[in-house]
Image (cartoon, rainbow, N blue to C red; front, side):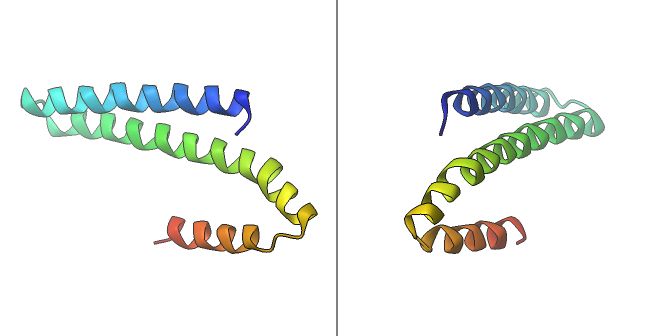
Length: 87
């Protein structure tokens, strides 16, 4: 993973962690369900953005390098990721 992608993903994961800790506190404090759900959606979006950023980097670097080396396993990995994402 290149440094820019790593930094961006770490930032997004830290954001998700902060929101998730907030969700835990909200539940402990018996906060109104709709308010809690809004925060869980924010956590999910942050994780989805981190995943998207990692996949983009993987496609531009690892997959291209693998294909240039003649490594067909990178395509199998993409199929596996696609299947996991659509479960």
